[in-house]
Image (cartoon, rainbow over the protein chains, first blue to last red):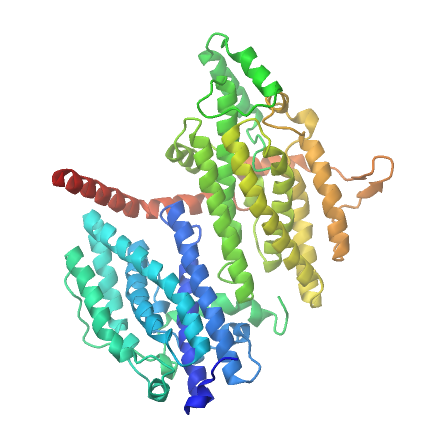
Length: 260
Length: 337
């Protein structure tokens, strides 16, 4: 038996929302990485991208399976993945942003995996044993993602002018979505107090140090954003998520109730 | 098959003329070489070998590698749309295996003296061939089942004997490839089986996929023996150990009962069990279609090559930056010494 969050005085629904957020972020990023299949700049990178996708979709499966159990209405990981519309998705907006090119993809992957490593590190000691277990497994995977994407950002930015241009563009276009990672939703506060969820606000400082360090190594000026764009817990997404779901959910929508 | 000689008659004639023009005097090692082959020895990368043996193998192994890489595209077409998370994960892993096979095979081919870059160039410029099967479209999810079941199934029948092919690096690559292919074949069959016992729509989807993939799959083994000009020498060199027709028959005999087991119908009215031969008789294959697809007139030939070229061209700046970075790092290292 694992420890249920309800024993710590928070509602099942908050935990459900929280697990959804973790699962959806992994799922949407996994779907994005899968888009590289057959299209990466080299065969080795093709394999790397599909590895990342495998890791992330695997994490999503575990988080969403748990979310379904917490909700208690009989929804499976597949039901949650394929039968919710965009407004019910809780992923970070940054992961739904388009791949653009290998440079932008690597910047996105570094920004997100650096965050996820910190989040999973903390979540691995959650009082919710189920979340802790998934986080501990996912942590090892994300540490590799972070190292890999960091190396590629440096390699491209310090390799050629073209590489520098594209990496800089990656930071510039994605920066406005980074604030959301450190935003604590109201419902999360209870979970944090109960030792279930991670207080993401505490992750901003170590994340910023890691990013500043990389920017300095590449000689890239730190981007600024007049306004951070957020909205995942309100179900307010960018235009991209709907299109991702069109692809991802197509079969389940076209053949309602069928088993695959 | 991934490895069948897909050169048209004109291409073969041209290559033969070139070879004649460049022919060296009889290589003294030829008799010794054949003796080694006859004793079932493996030929290794640094061993002496007749130039024609090297060329045949380079063509065959690189074509095999190209087939793995191009073969990622029709299946990749469904990764984003896989109908469940489990299916998505399995499909991702399968396509990743294929990329791995491609890399592995390019390395095996490189031991014969041609660089991966040159081989990839040959693919992109249309000089090199890949299996015709990947020029057929994957239009429904059931096609992912059919490709795994039939295409990978056919590949296994062809590749198991290749585990004992005379060139060592190729044979060893095949041992590993075969293990993974049998997992691919099973997952394809499992997709078909669950569709076949699903809703009427799903069953129709499965039967339609079988209808479209059956004939192209059995054509993968290449032209009938009497029309297969290159086979004899390859058999003598033990690059090839069974004829196209033998392998085709083996595949049909093992696949028909599988189709029956899940209630699907092989789209061949002439298919009949022959008690005497203990094998299935089957209908005429449409070789005109086969050669049309080889020549570039399949539904997807242009799309496939275009997709590979596009990926390669769009990745050029990445490879250049990585190369430049590596050079800079080497300079830093040298300066530090």
